[in-house]
Image 1 (cartoon, rainbow, N blue to C red):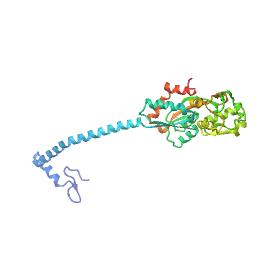
Image 2 (cartoon, helix red, strand yellow):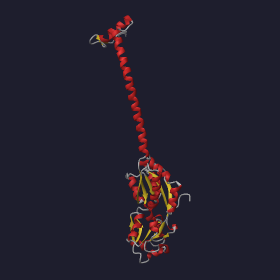
Image 3 (cartoon, rainbow, N blue to C red):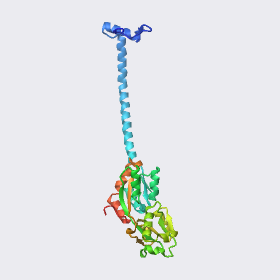
Image 4 (tube, rainbow, N blue to C red):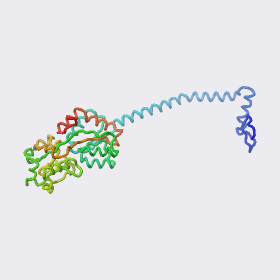
Length: 313
């Protein structure tokens, strides 16, 4: 092995310095004289002047970039706070939720929120298949619990009410009736929500079975897509009477037509209801804000007005 020596790097192939004479010779002169030539000093001064001239431009550029990032961050925070929230709500909430949303929008006009009403069972299936809902209010608490177990919830399951079922007709005084009166011949069609996917339909079936009437009345039953649809079947005359939600029968428009008969809740499983913030809404501030609003005294009072029994009461 050849001993290492100080000096320029060499190419064995060309036997010349790799850095070339352009750099080596000025360095040799500097080593010999201990000074830099005037040309070199001039070159250095020019470079320093150029750097000084660039400094304000560079500063302004960096400052502009920082301000841009800051504004972007503030804008993203504002947009996130105002991101719309979409609610999938059980049909028994139609009148109560409409009132709660009205006061919520008045108190928080900067927040956008909308609601769709329907069958709790169908909403559960839609959420599992990617439907864009941020909050899910179910008339059967087991549906949101199932979504939570399967990873579709960003929150715990929050109980919010227990519902009741009633007999109602817009042509007769149902308050004078019992379930056994449904066997009378004038009630040719009896409306209930579809038990396959609507919790109120399932409880109606349970009550009719407990009363020993299901087999006799089944040929007369007409099924609504949800409990609100079952009510419309009665209002339209497609059915003479129906088993509907107390929360719907207490709406002034419905209550002014005819009174209702409250069905004994010992005849069916409780209609325990609950909601979740869905997985897609984990970062949706409006969804979280409205979830908290549901526990406000004003919201709870609306729910009581429509016959819901609230947790802890």
